Length: 454
View 1 (spheres, rainbow, N blue to C red):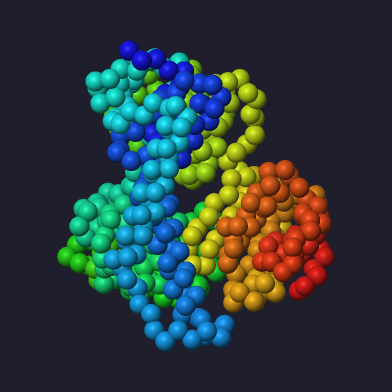
View 2: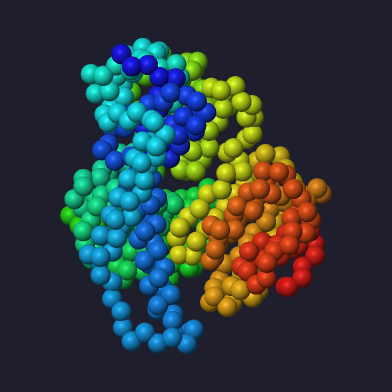
């Protein structure tokens, strides 16, 4: 029976990063993955293929507005065959890249389902037993269903099923206006598909800053958006919903069921470890350790935001604890989140509402991107940077951005929240001119009470 210092179950961003990091710190490591290709949901049927489609959608929007920049494009059309082939090509290349990293780092890869038989042993497909000193569970999550509406793989699809299509539907009804829902809505509407979004809460992207949600709602001009809509049924090509006490229905070529994700613990046999899940999630402490010493869990399988980059950081934290390296940083509150809609959204830290719930007095300012010279040059006609700061101290509590380059600017804002910097300190940072990132500096100036370009 083979023995390892570390066995990682699941080869998504939380799993394969943990395996590489552990190996680089001298741990003999094995990685177990049930699918043929490594990379997990994010790389194979999530982040990467979705963003590949989004990149094409963004390019199409730029072409549509080319005349504003003095360029005439007589006509253009979307070649869906080449679009989907490019998506597959990108995914294939990146999954092969992860397989190469496993080989280069001497990590043993086992394809199959990892199942615990006791607190020191896991089997692969019930046949190959492996001993471990430490184990990291990184099995991710799967798309959730509604009690009365289930994805059938034909008409009602989850995100995986939608990405597997080889041609575009005539129309799309998206049930759920969260991150995944609005990203697909942005893409398919840009491709010329009639899209309707039905969100039960009173805003899009529930949980994120309300000003961002309202700006996004206005920007999705090609999408029929219904918030406060309770979906009551989906059958016979029609989705029915209730809103404001009235019943409505909308026809759908395809339905995207995007109502969240649930932890994937199937097949693990956690009973053999004595681990009890909490609403499906595996409980962990501040070191990512479960109730069983030397067994850890990271990523979507635990109750933290379901973000690929957070899963990777959680994996590093687990490895640090295994190695005895001190790592007490709060990695959740200053963790940035991005919505790759059109326009793009990025957010980190607290909203005004969350600050209030935590007993913090706060204030906020909005700097419009229309007041930024580079944004104007690039044709960005809407969006803003919103800074939430603590009253009195000026400590940066949160930053929320909608508009071009949002995802590229949020890193600086994350550092500000993480380090507890004041808006005055952040406003002193010199930014290259002209750049859209100057909007962040201007927003910090505003929050400090010194508005320069507005």
